[in-house]
Length: 450
Image (cartoon, rainbow, N blue to C red):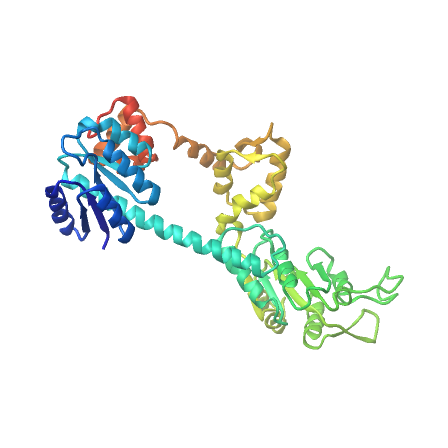
């Protein structure tokens, strides 16, 4: 049950509000003076404060209320405060709203309006606290991950990426094959590097072979090596990737492109650590940690007979699924910032455009977009046009600053009418903070309740 603290020297006000709130499952505490109110705040958990502006007899300046508000704000900066004031104190109340007060209400108040304001602020406060707790927890988990493991300077912020990293670091020291799946350009090789950096063979070599970048007839020679004369053009013996990776990690990217003959030999190496070079009858023994990656649907390839099922299960002891960039939006702006040239910065509209884009090419596409923007930007500020993104993302970016455009008198009056005069609701509808809406009302001469 939420708790509201009422600070008012008029006992009748405390009783009336206590009755009102009790009918709506809100607990009420009452303090007759600023000193008593501050003492309650120091020892009791409170969700919201309703405070008067004057406490001494024959005092109407509102200075006592100003002093109390400043003391509350100094010790409880996130606690919402509603001011109870007569219209003669409107200027002082508006000044306090500009300083961070949640709202102000006249005496006598409207029960329905007061309840709506209190309910909204309490729910908002609870949501903000939950968000702050979640953000704080994520930051702590991130620091722990960064302190405990070598993440090779990876830039990330999204919880989806963190889950992949946690699992990658957890299995890194186990001597088992790992399969990293996900679309092209998502950073699968970076995850493989992190696995290597935290493994028992981190001092050994890290060798990469992109199985999709070579003709099928050369992949076996790249993997296992070849003796002189093993194939046309093989004028001398050559070492394969398995030999080069002995004592370390071999990363096989696009493993789905490996031909069936190579798949059979790879399975034997994974099971025995032994292989033969092409054109040789001599077996060689290696100790290699294999990490593979693919953007292909290996299960579908098994059904088609183009990928061996036994190799799939041998490679897939641990699978890490790396989501596409659009599914981890928290990574977009940190990654974009990491690709900025020295001295460059992103305009707010450009940030909105980056967040609105679908990123079919994932991190690789983002890196290329930022490289282009660094070259085309006139001056230090990168704008939407410099990004060269499709019209949909550009339109979304254009809409973002529009939310900041100042609403006219009619728009404010209409929003207030729809919100029943509750300023916090009207401000939310207009995309403004309460303080910003109060400033516009004051500047346009709009009376509260208009």
